[in-house]
Length: 227
Image 1 (cartoon, one colour):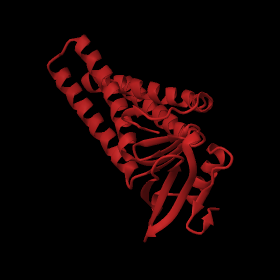
Image 2 (image 1 turned 30 degrees about the horizontal axis):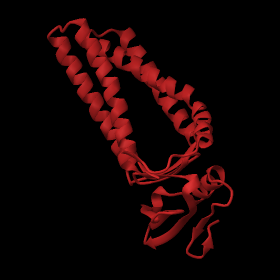
Image 3 (image 1 turned 135 degrees about the vertical axis):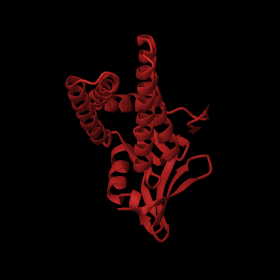
């Protein structure tokens, strides 16, 4: 078991890591498409803002379409390699963060264009924009994911438990519109997190347990095994 900020207590086995890596590769092409489209959109959008031309505008729109399409495809493919339950409105907050970053990027780009900044500074701006977006996305996932299952194990908020240390998973209603998800480690205190029912699809959860959990690890509720 470990916290995602560091401090391993028990490392997951190598076979699980290899299996997850193989599954994740399936989505890499779509992710590469998303990143490439976003990068081209930033460059073309910057050029369209600083020195407008119809070609730059068209390239920006096409690149944005490619990035959005790649993002949708990546999300679809990643559902096969992990199951996540987020805090409410995680998608809206993530979109707001991205919008804010893009507004800031193009605002700085307009400023640099107005003062005729050197090309090297513009390259730094583009590279910094891409890096900042990637960092904010990673930080957003850490802060807004409440529960996750994949080939390696179970994540409950910021704690990860490898499958070999899990004895059982639980799901129990705890109030109107709320469900408590839990992981019971073999030699540690149970881990629980309450999630909103609007963010949880019980069928997808049961399917993820069947797909990722080793044989013998059950998903149980207050009345016995969940179905």
